[in-house]
Image (cartoon, rainbow, N blue to C red):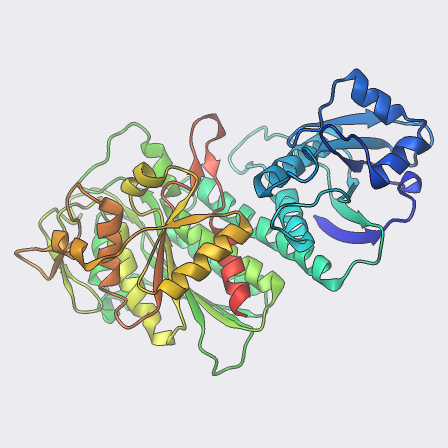
Length: 494
């Protein structure tokens, strides 16, 4: 979608398929919206009264072919009571208005944001959210549908301002669009069924990104190369499947050659049956989403390439399937990780940490400034935090604070959980250096504690997105989180 800013002196004379006007609850039309109302003979005011349109945030309605206006349609966007609009309300208002715009079938629209002051947020935040929601709201999965729903026709969206916009607002709108497109890439990869979205497919998508963006470089390691590196923990997970594992290394080079990068590590289990520790059949179809950590990393790297900050970032994605067969790893087996730490596998369904530990060891060779891994790691995190907050674990309080702030800014929020040494006791094994599970209590914490053993000396954080990576029920599908959080964090470090 083409996103832009434009100076609008006379909104009534604006030729567009759809003109979007904010309406305050209880106060009605003000500022530029009032000018438009007067130009059409107060028909908007009368419509608001006749339809009992409250102006509450999240409510919108459309009026067609009003006399005195050059716009083909006007969408009224409720923004709540004056002075009460918060971040959640602003997102509801924008989402509702954008949905109404798309329903009209127009190809272009102009949004007037005057009167949309958001508490504790600036104008750049609002435009960043608008750009992101404009892109994500138009996403439709169609790859495996014989008769897909028609895609929205909206191709151009402008924000109308009464003065020449400062560069910061233009950058914010562009950044929001990049986040939205990155989220859509993550959603598309997550939604694609596992018989198509294999480890090889993920590797091909990473290579395609590198071909499209000159600042990206991609390298893919096969199982023979991983074996030579000693990645027996990762390879133990893929032992039961015919699909070959891949280790994807995607580098963004926007800084100087000798500048240390920031690192992202993604869990890419393209289908998780649980292995020999087989999952229950009900809901197992959702285990195609177990690669959403990897998908979010690729989406973030695309958004990073589009925003082009002056920094270096390396992404490592461990991609494989977890399937049962005669060659599959068994409960009780002991494997040796790339770091030399031996692991007793008590449950083959706790496989994400087995691939991440080798990927975390591998990424150290880039001497990263920080490492953030992203994984749909534990059902325990869903129990603890539900679908609203991503679980955040870190061995560095400053890094944790930066990620929390980035999540709040992007409205892609996380909640910090402990990684105390007290929990390490649960991972003791009589037959190896560490067990891969720590019992029924504090499952998300012991999983993070397991990973922490492979990040000694590093500034590291772990994002457990098991609850936030996809929606269930009628709205089933990947969410694209936490692309917004990750990009905001990286751009804050540029």
